[in-house]
Structures are given as C-alpha cells and as structure tokens.
Figure 1: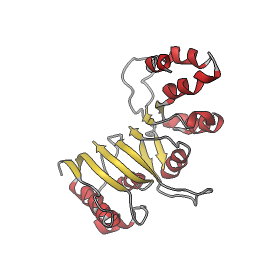
Figure 2 (figure 1 turned 90 degrees about the horizontal axis):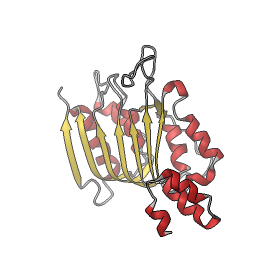
Figure 3 (figure 1 turned 45 degrees about the vertical axis):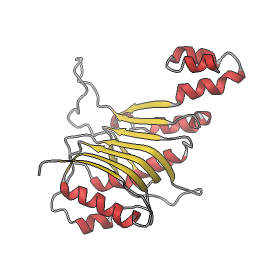
Figure 4 (figure 1 turned 90 degrees about the vertical axis):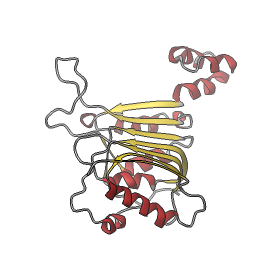
Length: 238
C-alpha cells in the first residue's frame, strides 16, 4: 500500500487506484474519504443530501475520520463577491437529532467541525437502535453571525459524546437577554455523567454563558477524575 499512501492528497490518482483491483480499493477509499468537507446552505435543504448519500453509499461511512460541515450562503447574483446572507435567506442549520443520527452512522469519526452552521432544536427522539455515545478527539464549533444564536443548542451538541479530547468554540453571537443561569442549566440535555472534556478553548464568549458552560461541566462531570485539565478563555466585551 506504499504507493497508495504516497498519493494520499491526489484525489484523481486515488480514484484511479481504486479501479486497479479489489485489494487496492479499501486503502484508496480510506484516503479519499478520511478527511471530508461538506458544504451546503439552507436553500439546498441544509445537509440532508449528505445524509441521503450516506444511506445510499454505506461503504463510505467507515472511512470518514475528520468531518467538516460548512455552511455557505448564496453568492450575490451576477458578481464574484464573497458569499453573503441575502435578504430572506436563513443561515445553514442542523438539529441535534440530525447530528446524532449522523454521528451514529460514522463509526470511525475522530474530529468534527461545524463552521458557519446554526445549531437549532435540541429535541431528541428515542433512538430506534441502541445508542451509545462515543468519544471524539476534537469538536470545533464556529457559529455564524451576526444573528444571535441559542447557546443552549450549541452546548447540547457536546452531550452527544461520551468524551471530547478538545472542544473549541469561537466568535459566536449569542442571544442572552435577561439570562437566568439556573434556567439555562435546566435546558442542558447532557447524560447524567458526561461528556468527559479534557481541554476547552473558548474565544469571544460572554461571561454569563461561560458560567453556564463551566457549571454544566462541574455538575455533570464532577465524578469523573481528571475532567477538564486545560482551559483557555477569551471573553467577549459586555
């Protein structure tokens, strides 16, 4: 497999290798699908097409290790300007249910990046099959702006995992009018113990929401020895 490994960043060559013989197919697929970036917008039904692709191409699931879901807005018609949110457009979004179903189908997933994607609706249906939260090496959330997002929905994404090696959150715009920390804590949907989080990297977060995050970790992870041994914080101006 040395030849295939040397072509790890050459998509065209890997596709050709996948057609050489049956023995070369698994290794070629590993390099083709290991790092996957999926782009979508709300007008394209968010990321439903990707979910349908995983249903139709089940052989792809086991190779996806590093997944990025990146929201893209439509370009300004007739221009080459950067993509912006046009009047009447909604930000690309994912629900907690969608993420749980997606994660359950990706057994090799190690890192997940949600970039310019709005997290909505923390309602979860009872799992149709045995659901066991899995460990994740790194979870990164880069929320869209400037419309305020619901921080609780973002926080509930963490509860989908049993362990997160590193969680990074940056530059969100959060709705926090008349926030009540205790009420916010009651809305967090985490399992009784977890997730085990080793490192937090927080940039531009208001102190009230940082308090909710840290208190949630203290309440749910206090019985787990060694939880949260590294914390980096950059607070947003109030």
